[in-house]
Length: 324
Ligand SMILES: Nc1ncnc2c1ncn2[C@@H]1O[C@H](COP(=O)(O)OP(=O)(O)OP(=O)(O)O)[C@@H](O)[C@H]1O
Ligand SMILES: [Mg+2]
Image (cartoon, rainbow, N blue to C red; front, top):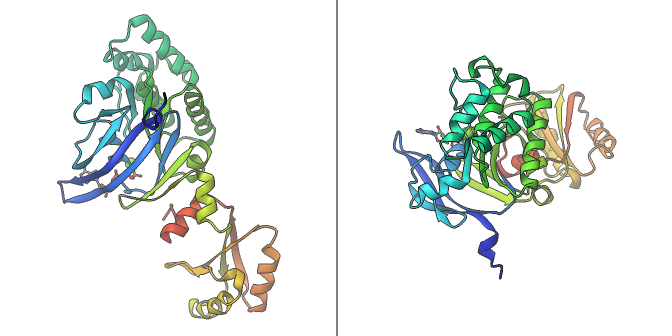
């Protein structure tokens, strides 16, 4: 018989972290579950509490309050058991600079008592799949930044864990390598692995995740599939406009604009003279908007359109852009 518990990979319950240093409340009473075989993402800006959550869940940091269970095991009380089936790719790079790519993979793999032949095969296979075949015998210190990040990933995976924590796995990678890592993450999911990743790239969360938790100031402010998040919190494409008028004039025109039913949710950005307007079917309806602005005697000097994305969801929820 299959019960609901069988389908849960990780259960986080009222998880809280207060760093004693300065009494920073980094993770604030967070609860959620990750299902077996899914890619679950934490999307949030710098300092949101993503790494702190990952480190607590992956047994690398003490928990202030609350609990984490992975495949039914409590990460604090059953730390050693949990470590056997998780892999963690930390945000900070962890390997030996003087060892080669292959030697690093072998060194970390040996900590798991994997038979040498099996370990060699696993290490070589990962090196190939992450595009580092011609750097197999290169010392880690001589790799480029993006290659080092991939080595970090290889090390996290060498014990073939069933549950993987990936903390910003594509930070600093060029677009081509990012896609290679995305494909790799998708292939892991196909093999039945459960993946918890953090990112501040909304396209990454969108492309890879079954579910996304948007985290800000240590709290989850929304959790759903990317599709449902966009349905719920984004009212269409977002148009950003700059005009040749003073802020005072713009503020007055905004009031008039907001009286038009379609544009009630337009607003001016706090620090800049940029007007943001979300419109349904943005590109098709742009001419109507431009006509309206001309009617108000507003001359556009710059314009950008962001298609309906998780970025817009974040803006709707927080009033800020993820990049701010
Ligand atoms: N060792 C520490 N001691 C004190 N405060 C810390 C420590 N590590 C992190 N913090 C604080 O906790 C908060 C959350 O940090 P965390 O590293 O979890 O954020 P993050 O979401 O991973 O951010 P980023 O996207 O920059 O990696 C921040 O305010 C940070 O300054
Ligand atoms: Mg982090």
